[in-house]
Structure formats: structure tokens, C-alpha cells
Length: 420
Image 1 (spheres, rainbow, N blue to C red):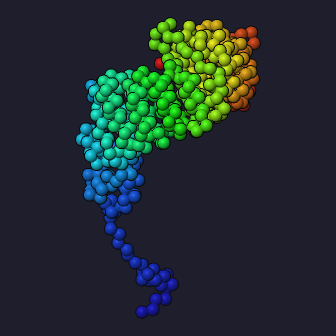
Image 2: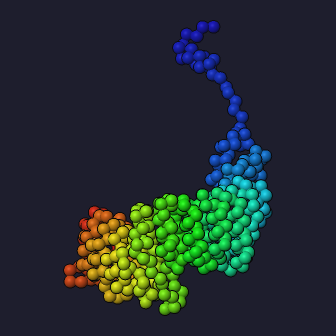
Image 3: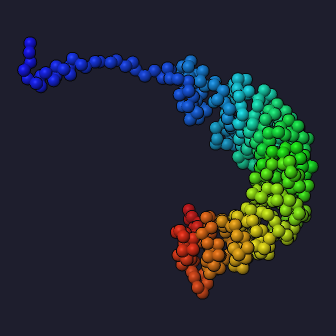
């Protein structure tokens, strides 16, 4: 039968050409392994473990080695911490099935000795591992220091001996000692690039010197000032050693007046800078004012300075004269005497300064504006508490932000202490 109406012809054509395709409902179990792997990598460990029980395919992906190259053991006591702890069953499963896959491992423990001992127990079982990065982190007080030294060193030595490819180690606030460092060097001297070991009282200057002598690829080092020596700086400056990139030094005193700090010779610093001209030398000071006598009498190539306790005007004056490489300066406390001349000296002589932080000290508004004018737009970070700025005949604190913003080329305001 012929259809004369063109609209009817069009409808018949569409109807005859229409094909119905049936699509089965999406089956998550048929997703390719690499897709599931990507999804799992975004999931927290607990959710990942739950997802692995959905089906056999997801369970297979759960045990793919790529998922276990990086792992953080969280060890907390429920009575003393609000953080969730890695389940003991999962820890044993990791040790049995995935120890060989672990490459980037960290242990985050709370303030309890039990958690630190549990971390040591896990370390002592990692005999078939090839760890590249190891970090021991105390979230509160340094609980690893409460573990018997022999227990800690024995557990750490297991990793040092079996990994043989360690490149980054963070073992600050631990009872690591010289003999264990020698074992580290004997098995990982070709691969070690970063070593952070501040507040390790059982390590001597000889122990850290052994590391510097044999680990020629070491690029980053963090340590306490008491084990810093001229011999260490010269070892880091040898022709066979790679350029050092970052040297962090913690200068700490627990007993005021009882510690007399040794001095580092200028020629040792000069050798380091000649060998590694781009090295960042970072110093954290937690001293009482009378203990600063040793420091900054000669030119010191420090780039970042942080003072956690009060520091005298005299020391800040030395910094202006003897720290030409200074990039960042943070002063947490000084006193009521204005730091006008000291800041201006720093601005004139420290041509690389780009960051300044001041708290619990005093600077006149005019001197601060002049400091910013001298430094100019190279000051990329300027954190000054409002109460630091002292009004004078020329400016009040309310007027400072306009002048400072003009010299910086951006809007700037002092920091304000929140009132809760």
C-alpha cells in the first residue's frame, strides 16, 4: 500500500531503520585490572581492604605488587590516641605476602613506648625487602627513645642489611648509634641520598663522618650541631662527593649555661660552598641568649635561620654583617628594645633575603618601612605580627600597610593574633 502523506513516509522510514540494541547491566567485576588498580590507589587502606572482598577479581587486584610499594604503618594505643591504628591482621598479611614489594615505608607512632616497640617488631621481620625510603615518625614525644637501645638497633639493622638500596632515611629522635650507621654504609653506600637524624644522642661526630666518607652520593643531611665538625664539612667537600643540596643543623640546648658550643672554622665553610655553591644551609636555634657567644663571629654561609627562643640584638647585628647568603630569617622572640638598626643592617648586607618573620619583638614603623624599601620586591614572604610594629613620629601601625604595599608591589597587611 502506497502512502501518499510524506510525514507518514518519513515515520515508516525511521521505524524500519530503528535497531534496538540491548546492553547488559554494568558488571564491576569485569573491569580491567589496570582500571581497578587506579581506583584502589585512591582509596584509604581500610576501604581498599573492604573492596577486596567484593569478588575474586577485586581481591586479585588488592594483592598486585604496585599497590604495596608505598605503605605507612600507623601504630597507636587506643587509650592514648585518637588516630586509628593499622590492624594487626593486616600487618601480618603485609609481612607474609608483600614484604618483598615494599619500597617506600614509614612508621607513624604515638607517644607510647608500646607503639614504638611494635614498630621495631615489624622492622625486625622485614628480611625479604628492598626498601628505598624509610621514615620513623613520632607524632608526639619521641617514643622511640624509650625503646631499649639494643632492641631498636637490632630491628633497624635488619632493614639496613637486607635492603641494600636505601636512598632516603629519616630516623630523627631515635637511639640509632655509630655501629648501626657503619652497617648502613656497608650495605647502602652507593644508593644513600638523604639522611635525617637530628636528636640522635648515641651518634658521634665519628659516626656521621663515616657516612660522609663512604656515601659519596649523599645530597641531603640533617643533624645536630654537636656532631658537626670541620672534618665532616671537608669530607662533604671532597672531589669525589656529589654537590650537597641541603644541610640542616639543629642547635639545641636543654640545660642553660651548661653547654659550651664548639666553633666551625671559616675555611671549612668556604670549602663546602666552593664545592656545593647552591647548597641550602638551614639552622634551627633553640638556645638561651648567653649560649650564642660562639656563633656568627665570622662569615657563615647559612641561608635559612630560625630562632625558636629569644635572640639578642648583638647576635642579629652579627648576622647582618656575617651572613651574606641569608635567604630567610624567622625571629620568634627578642624583647622590648627595637631592632631598627639590626634589621636595616640585614637589609643592606643580605642581598639574597626574600623572607622575614617576626614575633614577640619590636620594630619602629619607620625602620620597618625603610627595611622593606631597601629589600624591595624580592621580599616574597613577609610575616610580621601586628604588635611588633611600634608607632613613631612618622607612622602609626595603621599606616604601615600602605607604604609597605607600595614598596612590595602588592597588598600587604601585618598578621593579627586571633581572639578566640
